[in-house]
Image 1 (cartoon, rainbow, N blue to C red):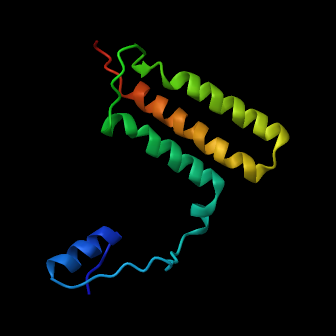
Image 2: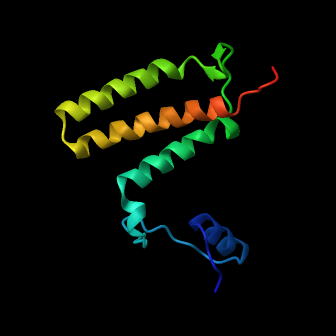
Length: 121
């Protein structure tokens, strides 16, 4: 059969062949993952890198910038950092992790803007 990378590719091939496909709402898929892909460190790095690529692919229509970083995400990043620090002090580790992921998203986005700045102008 075909080697399929994503479900959308499979459904596109099914449609081009003229076959029927059914949605099974309560079905679940089990994927094999390496042990390192389940660690929090890996997930933080992946979130950071994914957010780092956002400014290149999506752009950001903001006129006020400092070092090519729009000023809008800076207060949100400060709030996320504050929530993460407070969470580390008063919450269990598992409850703090979503706050860390939000912070890594903002830090990655800011780093993406900063690394893609126009040096000449």
